[in-house]
Image (cartoon, rainbow, N blue to C red; front, side, top):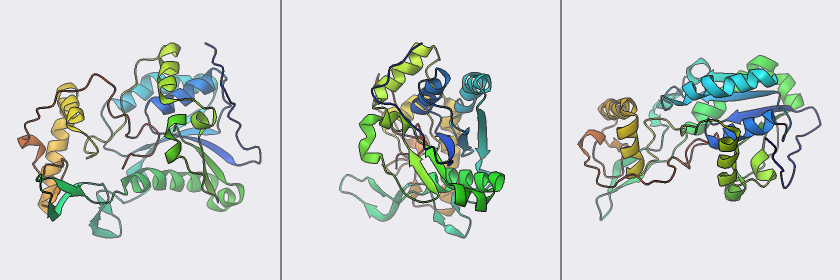
Length: 278
């Protein structure tokens, strides 16, 4: 397989640690494929955070298809469990009243349509970014990495330019697909042409960032995850009765979904890039 990139992605050559931060979805997998076929250079390692509430089929896909590719091309693939590196869970480790995911809240009342607003969400930074940074500091030495610097390769594509930011300092971001001007649809085609099965969409099964079509898809295709989300919501409301997973402010087990699933790909804006869509 040969891929001609409109522009080349060129990693920094100043000794910074090059880390592909995988969100587990199509765009992250496209980057692995491009590395495998030699279209972009190899990173020092590929890393993926395990939020420990990931969709049940995501890590199975990576064990079957991505880990063997990484082994064959000699690139280390690391999965970092959240609970090994932080005590942040539904609430922050320092405050058991601060809920991290962006659940729908009844705290400020309902709209004229009876729908709920959303509280701010910080689960991506606390469940993904922070554990990965702590892992890397522990493995390579915090002082050494502060001196050396780290570039995180994030899988945002050329059509996501409004989300692309280049912060300065020790932890910096690079965007191989964006910098090579690869669109999301092209990333999907690259994965398909390479011969890999369609990747499952990476998202926590209790993530509130879903439309009805997506809840229906989960209920029909991954019923164990839907059941886990229902149970989770019931347990969440024992401590926070004003929080819900659905904008209607009705528990998942009581909602009668009427919208049929769309034929297009779903979860397109979840965690494929390594940063949840909040």
